[in-house]
View 1 (tube, rainbow, N blue to C red):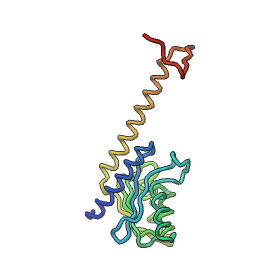
View 2: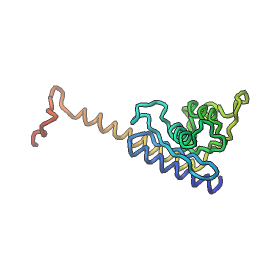
View 3: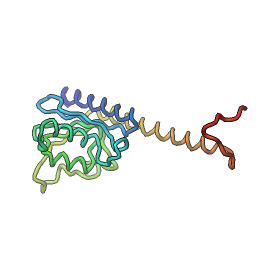
View 4: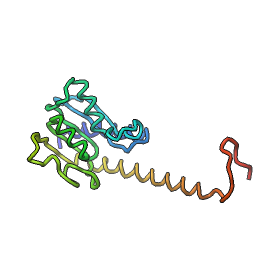
Length: 178
C-alpha cells in the first residue's frame, strides 16, 4: 500500500460517511488520474430511487462527464467496499487501469470474494485489482452502520408493540397525560 493509496482510500471513507448521513449504505469511491482526484461518489440508490447508483457508478459517471469520454484507461478507482458484478463490469468497460478496495464483500463481491470478474482472461480488458487497503476502518464503518440500523428497527418494532391492542392513537394530537 502506498501513501497515495492510503490517502485516496481516506477520501473514499469520507464519501462513505456522506452516504451514511443521508441514510445510504456507507460506501464511498474516489477516482484518480495521474495522482489527482478527478471525481468522487457515494452510494445513492435509496435517495435517487436508482438501483445502479452505487458509489463506483456515481463516481464513474462524474469522471466520464468531466473528461468527456466513457473510456478512462488512465484512471484508478478507490472504493471502501469490494465492487459488485455490475460495478466491476462497468469499470472494465470504461477500461480502468486499476481498482483498489477496502473491505471484502462476502455476499456480492466480484473481485474475489464471491466471483472474480477481473480475473476472467476471456474478457478483452484487464484491470489490476488490489484489495484490503484500510480494510479495518472500511469494514468497521459498515458494521457500525448495520448495527445502528438493526437497533433502530428493534426500537421501532418494540415501540409499536408497546401500544395496547385496539387503542387508536391520533397522530395530530399529543398523547394523553400519565
